[in-house]
Structures are given as structure tokens and as C-alpha cells.
Image 1 (spheres, rainbow, N blue to C red):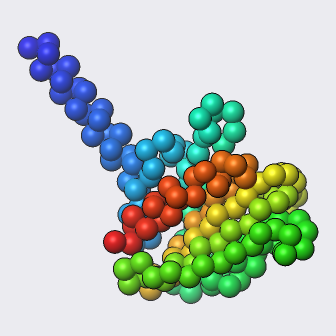
Image 2 (image 1 turned 180 degrees about the vertical axis):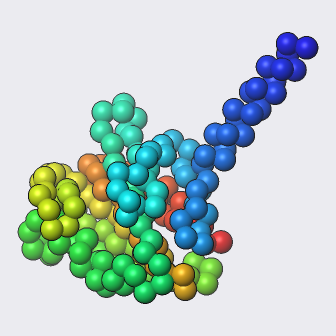
Length: 173
């Protein structure tokens, strides 16, 4: 009897962890990468927030999801420009890059930059973070675009890029 009760508790815990790995933002259900953590959002504008730790858990990157409804959020190009302006210096020195892909029926624009990132709310005080990188994805959808942005130490962001894209695309298939 003890073994079966223990088995049931273990299976319940595994199911809870698996359920926590999926989360919804607008019409999309994303699959969180296994080693990434779901964390409480730090702003009402954020629909979901994740934390990516390096192997030693000495540094971390943040992944945030935004959705403002149909026609909200300023559109793809306005957000690309806003994200790039969060970095100091001329664009040609920031390694900026955009790439448009089609995943299922949705257009996704991937965005990247690297350098000194000014962390903080737009229009408010910022904290310069040197050696940072950003990977972003803008998913165009009828219910409103979904904006996903990962920022953190450049080495960690670069190492996490494949998982980032896999997570984004997991919601679109």
C-alpha cells in the first residue's frame, strides 16, 4: 500500500511539473525549455516571464512575453526599433540582425543585438548592463502580435538561442 501511495504522489508531482512547462500567451501555448524556470511577472504588461540560468547558476537571462491585443503594441518595426534603442552606440556596432520566417501560418521576425543594454522601463531610469545580448521574436497574429524578448549576459543568451527559437516555434505548429 505504501508503494502505491508513493507512486501516486510521484506521478502527481511529475504531472504538475509537466503542466508547468506549458503556458499560454494569447492564442499560443508555449513549451518552456526544461532547464528554464517560470517566474512571477514583474509587471502587469508582461504575460509570462522565464529565467534562464547558466550551468553554475552564477548569471541569468530573462525572457519576457508581451501581448496587447489586436492592433496593440506598436507593430513589428516599431518594436524592433525600440529594442535596438535599448542598446548604447551606433547600430552597426551592435551586431543587429533581423530575420523573417514563416512557421505554420504565422510570420515570425527574429531580432538580435549585443552590447551595453540599458535595463529598465522605457522612459524611466535605466541601468547600463555591459556585455549583454538580446534575442527577440515577434509573432504576428490576428488576435494581436506576441512579443518575446530574452536579455542577459551575451554568452548565456547566445548559448540559449536554439532553445529560444524552439520554444517560440513550439507554439506555432
